[in-house]
Image (cartoon, rainbow, N blue to C red; front, side, top):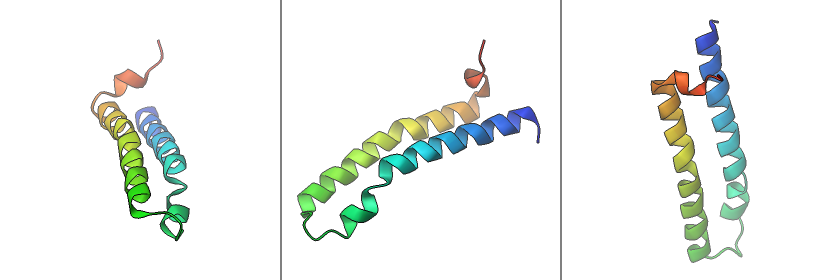
Amino acid sequence: MNPKTKRKVEIISLLVGIWFIVTLPLPWIIGDPNVSTPQFTVILQMIAFISIPFVALAVAWMLKPELTQNN
């Protein structure tokens, strides 16, 4: 695997890992009968809002990989 491809895989893995940690409580919230619909809606909106920067970073780094290089 060439270094450029390896770097892309590392970046995507990092973003997926962070996103997974952010969304980790979601399965327990879905199955909990004590969570009301408005609470669930707010939590889903928060997770979606938190996900936006990770998607944007992934797109930017795929289009311009030189942004990830250290000087």
